[in-house]
Length: 438
Image 1 (tube, helix red, strand yellow):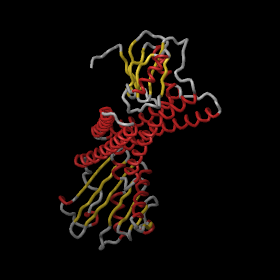
Image 2 (cartoon, one colour; image 1 turned 60 degrees about the vertical axis):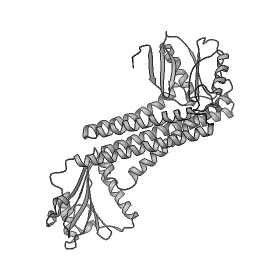
Image 3 (cartoon, rainbow, N blue to C red; image 1 turned 90 degrees about the horizontal axis):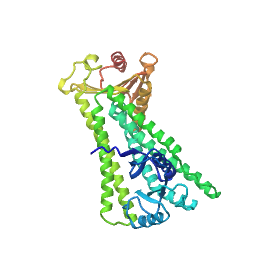
Image 4 (cartoon, rainbow, N blue to C red; image 1 turned 90 degrees about the vertical axis):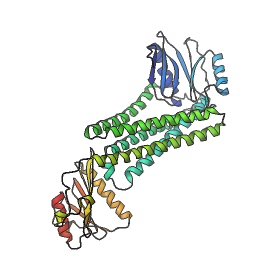
């Protein structure tokens, strides 16, 4: 691509009900010597001109669909009407059409009826609001499955999992911010309309405040990314997943528009095709994220350096360790916590445990609460038996399923271990684990 100093592209997020903000932005750019050439999504392309005052009219035309081609019959009719009124057409972006005129002193507004303008902008915004809600719900559901179902060993000890969680949370927050902003505007405007008062539209200053929140969300994502990159080798996995998500999203949107524009479908058919296509794109994006997490997890397990000696083995209980080839160890570490899973032994004696360590006490409490909740969900009885073992006050012991599973925790460590040793007292078993692991 040849660099053209007479062209400029900017990133500007907006919704149809923020048309006044777009007008103010474009007029400000004209005074700086840039006139709008085209809009592609949130990318505004400008052409270099002599700085001058221009008056823009950014109109939401609800009769056309965001899926229509730019030169649909309805769009052309509306365009001719505006041109006849002295406005010059620039471009169309979805339901938005952009016009301008240079004689700023004698301006005839394109839309003069406040009620009609409100209805047009409200209807034009519904598609975007629906898509914002859909994205927020789907990502929220995925976040719920990832972090609120099952135990948290992997999620707490994988930087990639933590980063994907923060990224999904940021996407949800950005979309909900847009939805809430729309409903605040709609309610306020409806009240004004009933009182026959001027209907306010979000101006440039209000839009910048909303976009400032989005920048904060993105800033949080970048901070987590930097921490993850500086702490472990997950950076390549994170970048790979981000690129996959971006390319899938872009390809999905482009394919849907190309498919719809190939034939003349009715408006309901276009909406259905668009909704189904976007839903599939989001589901594929989420699955790519989850698949990337699994691949990265397996890669990290194979490449991670395990501790030189597992914290607790059969030999610590006075038994002979089993065949080294039959011992399974999995170690993972993140900026929040580290987890060791150990499983090994002989035919008659076998030990299996998960040990989570963290400098943040809330992660241990969160994991303990999750384990207890899951065990209760399986129908197991849980009993606090700390008093039986003469341990420090900050060491807690919970017996699950009659002592078959023991949960031993301190403010910074939690061990879930299966007790299969009938020839050893529970007291000696717990005391040995305490001495070796805490």
